[in-house]
Structure formats: structure tokens, C-alpha cells
Length: 257
Image (cartoon, rainbow, N blue to C red; front, side, top):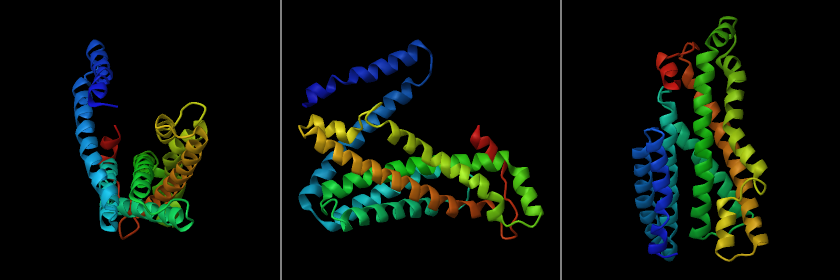
């Protein structure tokens, strides 16, 4: 696809802007900013990846993975502004997800240790884990805000913070996994995922494309589960103080609205 042909796709951005103006949604500025940012970011990343792929240097691969994890951590952190010390916990959960999934992929010789495989899969796995983490944190804060009296009752009766928060933590973890599970259930019937579609467009056999897509889906499922569960158990202690009292900030409620 040439740049001239690609420029024609700006009509889709124009449609979004036009609909926003027509219905007075007020998001036309955000649409334009999003399109411009995506263009700049993708072009820059494209040239960086071209250099990394050609260099085939382990340090460059690790640097790209570190960048992916850091940006994902920063984005997910914005979902939990009222939980102190949550940043490094998000980063640790995403890093653990990356290490476990890549260790299995490479250790079982499912993929070779090449930048185009490792970096591409890292982006998809960490990206979906980031979404799951964001949903988990949103739901956990909502559960604490809505079920504060129940949590306080368990604590007053001598229960530990873990016993008090566990039912609500489970709901938050489930919420973090549901989008990934639902997306996986409908793959092939409702949607053809990007990897599969990209391979088919590039001329690969549909059967081969399906195999790669199944591998990615299973990695994403595992990654979302690992990140959600690990982050949930790392995050909930921050809702209590050293005296095992629930630390509830009014900002949580305003953050949920």
C-alpha cells in the first residue's frame, strides 16, 4: 500500500468528525488528535522496528519490551489514581505476564527468538493484559466504594483484610477477564482478528493464519489471567492501613463517576 493510497483512508476519520459535529457529540477534536497521534506513533515505531529487526540485537529487543511494559504501566496507572503505590505493582504484574508467556513460547520452541516474533507478540500480550488490569482496578475501586459497609463489618468481626476483600476481589478479577474471554468466544464467528486478517492479506494460507491466531489467543488468555490475578492480590493490601483498617478515600467515588 502506497502513502497515496493510505491517504485515502483519512475519509474514515472525516466521517467520524462529521458525525460528531452533526450530532453535537463534542468529540471531533479528540478524534483528530487520536488520528494524528496514532499516525505519528506508528510511523516512528515502524522505523524503530525496522532498525531493531535488521540489527537483531538482544539489547534492542529487551529495550523494546521494556518500553512496551512501561507505557502499558503508565496507561493502566491512570485507572487507579486513588490507590497509592499501585504503579510498580502494575508494572510487576505486566512484566511477570511477559516473562511467563515468552518463556513458554521460547522454551517450548513455539516461536524462534527473533525480533519480529518476540516484539510483536509482546505488544499483543502486554496490551491485552493492560486492558484487563485497567478493568480490574476500576471494578475493585467500585466494589470497595459500594460494599464498604460489608467490608467494615467483616473487619469488625475479627476478619482479616483478605477475608473482607476476597469476595469483592474475585468479582474484580472476573471483570478483568470477561472482555478477553468474550472476545475469544466470538473469534472466527463475529470477528476475524487482526493477526489472522493481516496474514491473509499478506498472502499467507488461511489455515496457517488460523494457527498463528490460535497461538496468540491462547497467549492473551493466559496473559490476562496472570496479570489480573497477580495485580489483584498485589493491589488489595493498599486499600488497608497497618492496623488492618479499610482506607477509603472520597476520591474513589468521584473517580468512578
